[in-house]
Image 1 (cartoon, rainbow, N blue to C red):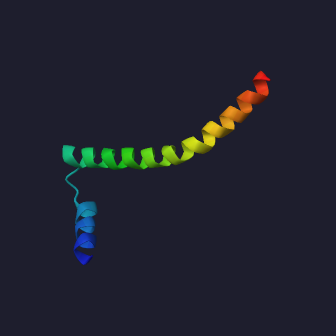
Image 2: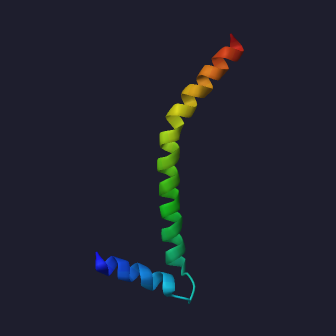
Image 3: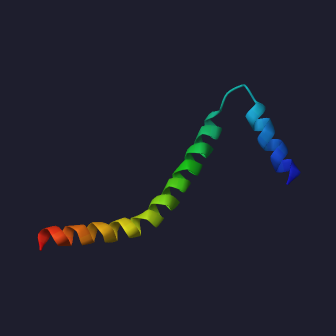
Length: 58
């Protein structure tokens, strides 16, 4: 566990800028987090939207 913390600290203290690989990894993590968030949110939103549209079209 200490090795991971050490590597993370080294990453944050590196001032040379991000490489393409780091941008790709960051984008993949962001995309994964957004996918998980919106998949959980989709079920509730689709039910609420269906209920609202039913009230309009009746």
